[in-house]
Length: 346
Image 1 (cartoon, one colour):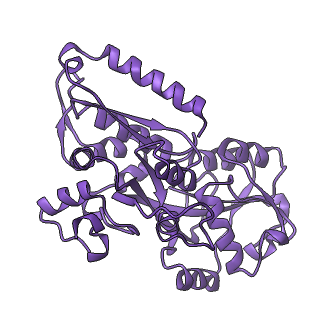
Image 2 (cartoon, helix red, strand yellow):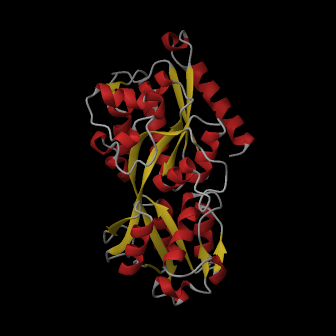
Image 3 (cartoon, one colour):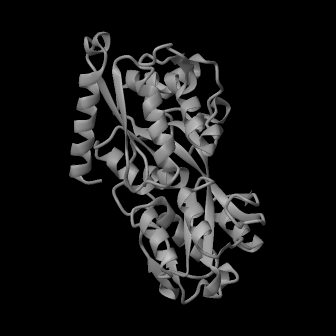
């Protein structure tokens, strides 16, 4: 994320603080950032709703959502201390945490910690009908959008090609993000794309509405191979009518999006964030002070937000909890898997 974006975000935050009501201004404000994804994806609306919900229920805190390149970029921003938290695919978080040299090309992030699991992300394989592609094995020699460099989708694309015996050398990879991907497909400058995202994805809706496309299923042997080597890829079926003109179910795989931070972030801050994620609190900047939780705000913003539930808080989590989040779950009497207990709490 550019310094310019952070500068603009900082100015917006300052304006928000200046216009807050009198009692709130008397308190010293805490600032907390959530790195999300590109406009049109699922991280962006859910992360934005979460930031709004937390700002509106934690009296001394201003939470801002930052757009960006999603998983890989978000983890790197967190590791450098440029943002306090972000949403990431669980496989990307794991690769960063353990320093998987095969998948993670930047320094290991041993301090990566989790706040909660968010929602499943489904792999979309969308191709133009006129491309002649009938199955994933027909991608050889084609122009394939694999996601922007530094994105979770591009991280995944390599694994998918590997599972069908291919690599980027066997086709023409195109590294672009959401808006550019839509334009490439509409202009027929790409034959197809891989995209890991919650369903529905606004960009997939636009592509399906404006072009004749097919969503390809993953063959059973490909799914088994992926799950055997990379257990976080879970077999799922994308329901029929998830997108315009897609009147058939699609067998594919999904991973979990998780909300991550780093161990160095203040324990009290993460404890407060976790509390307000799950518990209904008065909305301090609304006239009637209606009760709401951060999770409820996410559910109102996007269909995938409905999957953000306390009972799913540890679903697919691949890195230890932050000490502040751990404290919250422990106080609530929730059984915490041994692998998720933060090293700082042992």
